[in-house]
Image (tube, rainbow, N blue to C red; front, top):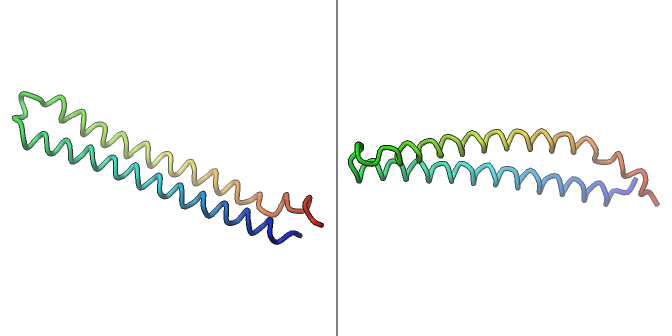
Length: 95
């Protein structure tokens, strides 16, 4: 069995796991930005005049967080399925 191929596949999966985590953290960061924007607008202007914008920021914050969580777990499931394939195709490359 070619150990280099298996190592390369394992390293690729580790990079993919880290990229998935980074993407999840960026969704959380963006969601927090929208939350802070909503809080800032709420504190700067009167609620009655521009209440729709505050609700829009809060809604986008919650929506971004939900999308980020769903994306993270769906990608995590795909990575777990791909991890099962490591080593199975390596038999074709044995010298």
